[in-house]
Length: 511
Image 1 (cartoon, one colour):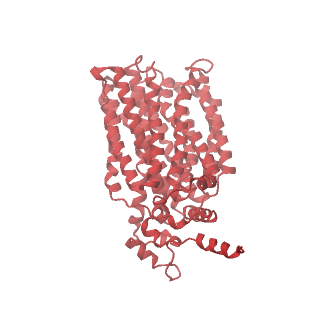
Image 2 (spheres, one colour):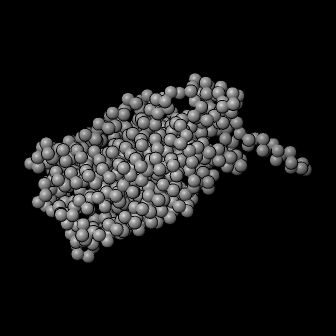
Image 3 (cartoon, helix red, strand yellow):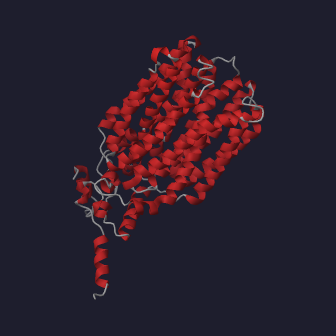
């Protein structure tokens, strides 16, 4: 038995020892504040890479279109380079979701970190055989697919371990710290990914844009590399050690019956959020180019794009506290409903905002739209996914929900250009800007309905309570929960299944 657990088992709030390891509250563990906090940081902060590496491709795509107006701008390469990461991310989420439940939270997370470092570097050095331009785009597409696999691993391995680690933090503060080191990190990645290309254009000038896009991609190596040492030092979360099913066969039929409806709702909300959120973020620099005109310097377009991305931060930080105050379900519902209302306002006012002289108004209203998205679903959908399932299957549950989100993002990056190109007046008309906001806002109202009426309440102790409910459900259906947990925990685990079966046998008359 781990020494910290042994020490904690000897403590209870009333002075009595805790006999059953499954009744142990994580906040009673004898650890310093740093010992409780740094696993949360190490597990969650890697999502900064997701924000940076996913969003920087929007600016890189703008540069590539300027460098290769026909070979890139008028070919499938433009959509492929922007969207292929989402395909890899879905694969990575599903694979690492299984690995994080059946192998290890720590080693799954470390593996995804190494993949991020390798393919972020290879993407920056993309080269076509013989200097071929189309070979360059093919190589960049391939590297970004594998990069997506690494990003996908951050979700089930990192976020799930982060959620479990917050169980050792002070009650009343757990949601905010989970959000601060997951979604806020993604949004910080968005901001930095918009700011870096602007600075690089000012440094290299528009005469050396080939260096700009390569350096912008290459800097994506730094975030995962900076976390490598912390992640090597990680230990498995206590919740995982107690509740894992890696040493037994998972009763999938019981899991499906218990969670199918809840998982469907969480997945649908995540699909809607990413459909809008990632699509808007990727194409924001392109929209600004249309508004500012072709004669505007590139750094100015990227500068306004940075201002837009800064609006993510107040929404994300404010939503972190709101989630603790009123709960993730209500915070998600109110946030996404408000986002939908602002989106309808944006649709109505777009014809007046779609001019260079009103670009400031466009950025402010669009920024509020994005900020409300972070306050609501951006902050809380990952929290909901990580805390509405039992620890034993949390990695796979979260992975499926997050995969639906990335599928939404993937669909959005293809659908938005189609909506714009087929809008009345063509891709440069007002409807090309209005219609995406109209579609997105309508979906926001649907997501608010789902959150208010179909999501469960999520409190500070939901992870522990969900584990208890899941164990009781398994036991009620004859599954022996003493099979759960690591080898050390199995030795100290208890189950009521045998007792109930014995009582049933005594009540059954013999023939």
